Length: 142
Image (cartoon, rainbow, N blue to C red):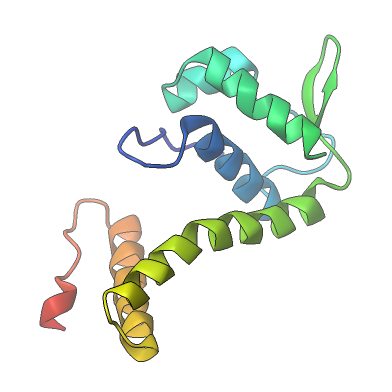
């Protein structure tokens, strides 16, 4: 399973980025009910973050019902986690998207201009994800 190092340049708090990654992996079937999350120390090493930050994220995931702590075993994915994660993933993205859409409208962009911008950025992101060494095309030239 692929865990992505956390971006320190993001405006999203690190513990929320960790929650987002776990929710995404569970929602997409990368972790199934009954499977273990990496230990706090292991996850901190994989994501290059402080173990206390991982512990905070794991606590939030437990309060959300995505994982449950088992003494001597670790953090298990709950039976309800796939459905809860799918719902949570959409909610997280909506919360992050709303301020950007408000900004775009505030800058005077029309709905069709915003949609076109999103389509171009999504295409560039897909290209860059599939070909990390390639530089995405400049959307202004398309």
